[in-house]
Length: 395
Image (cartoon, rainbow, N blue to C red; front, side):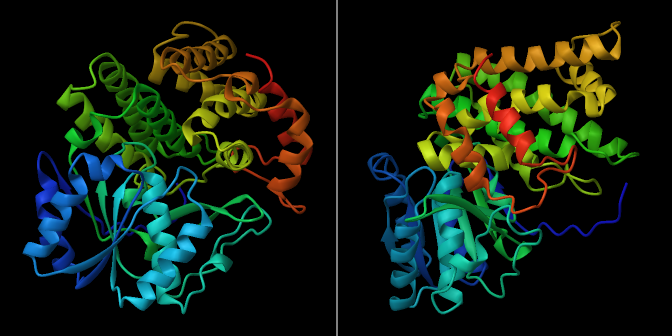
């Protein structure tokens, strides 16, 4: 295990009806004038925005609204949000939604606290160290999608226009002050969106699990336990979307997968996310669907870097390869992972995702490694990334 600092201050209000506490929580964490940020019309039609607004009003908190966040959140709406927050004297961002809404709110929080400047903090693989964010307004979350883990993470990923580049900012300053997590709010999600969420949180665990760091037994075991939970409880959710207990386990798993409790003290990878971000930027596909295509291809490409790690993954997560050689078990584990993604109804190839093989050179170019490598498990150069994209052309 390597030395680390860990600070995770997000207050979690978990359970049925917890959105009624939103106003109380905003006030507790210093908010007096809120920008209420959300996605499409479903949050309004379901009455959730109204209930949250009533909770704010009951706590004596004024607010303005900005809806319209799309998956792979766009910089144009972020710019609008920054202008609105500054002109209205907003001192708190409240995101109602999933990862895209939360990440958009985090970007607005940066811009509103830095005189309108936020874009320069969003960078890609062309830099080795992200620029430090000097200030950000506090952010709170009412979570409606179990997936990205942004409700308790240090990260924000957005789509920069007009370049159409998916880029990230990060730092402890971006961890939300609180997250309201009512599993009932996820029950109306379409099956495909639920499946994408399961793939996303599983990928967050894989990015931490596949590491060159030795002697990390505790976080290895944590990763495996949360991965098994995602697989087992995810199957229950897909079979019965109204299963509250399964929804609750999945929702909590998404948070634990990305608040970094499973990644402390170990080198992390993040190559698959970097590779996928170019897909969702170019094709506007769901992030989880893109990961379902990229992750198995990445596994197949890097497997020989540490066959024993993949064998452990096979045996301890999917229960396959027991009694087999490590080599056979490692292959069985990747096959089991593919089978699980297929059972969720997710794409496994470029064709199924809607991506095109002829765009691979463009995808590699826009990743913009700029001489840097990608990933901590097996550092990748551009030719490696191209090879992984080409593995995505077939099952």
